[in-house]
Length: 427
Image (cartoon, rainbow, N blue to C red; front, side):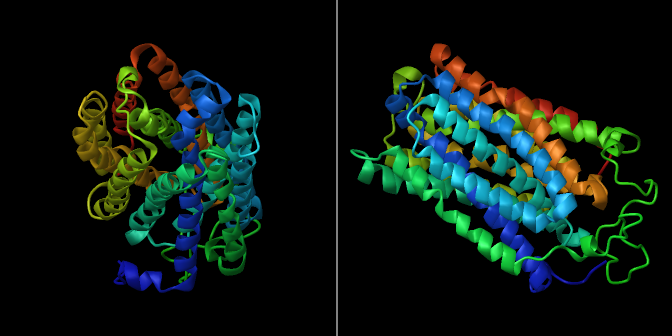
């Protein structure tokens, strides 16, 4: 067992830079994607579209993200994690800026589809990059920190919206907010200069594409399990012994993502829509404030999951998060009190998002090195395709039942994910 602490390991430039790069990519991914959720009421009014159409645009983004994730997963395995990470960040940043120049639902949808391609690719490349540079004893904590960056990005989107919208409301309005989303593209320059491919990837044997087990230097890095044939065929994921984890991880992710995107895509609208529509009628500044406080809880949920999962069985911690989230959602969405929403928000964020840290480490440890980028991209993004119906479904239901009652449906997704995860053969 390694005796080095997490902070001692982080002093290594390779580990530190990959952790920073993946975290920045995920944070900016969140910021660019969630700007749309925060701007939905303004966009609906300006472009004269319905809640169902707005939800449909988000659903198209998720489908596109699934395609992007699978594509960039292949790019990451073939050309390197850092190249895939840089390219995906560049794509979603530029697409966010293009949203500012749209004047119809169709044009906006096209830009969000382009954004989705980059959004999907970033996660697969970044998670694989961190997983292959951090040892087993601290891997869950490292991936938990990467996941926690999503909360920072979401909160940053809320802060930008609160600062920019009131100042440009009479002129550019929501378009000015999207223009800000282009700036993070500059981070790709730092990634290309400071982040290098994991040694485990550089040392792959051309014949087997597996890290030599005899390498003392890599005794704590990723190696392909000995029972796998020395091949990198994608079809291995659908053959024994990888078929079972592939199916379970993909399906549990589909259920949890349905719950997450259905809930958190509409939380800003839930806070800002009139009481008559099931919302709480908060202005843009208060909506952003409530959202930032919720993301503070989300950040803690992500980071503490890593700590708990390095100390207790990861599967049990993962399932516990999902079950608690399922119980909290109805309490949060059906209350008529803004104070209750304010107090429950951080808890919903903690459990309803923090479980993603578990998906990262569970998926990363389930697949061999040579297939990890493709496997994680596929498992995550096929699940994302299945969950793409959530934003549209919630938007459609909100038109007839109100936004609060519509959001209760997401509780079932969290519960189903917990049931499926119980079939994992892992601690």
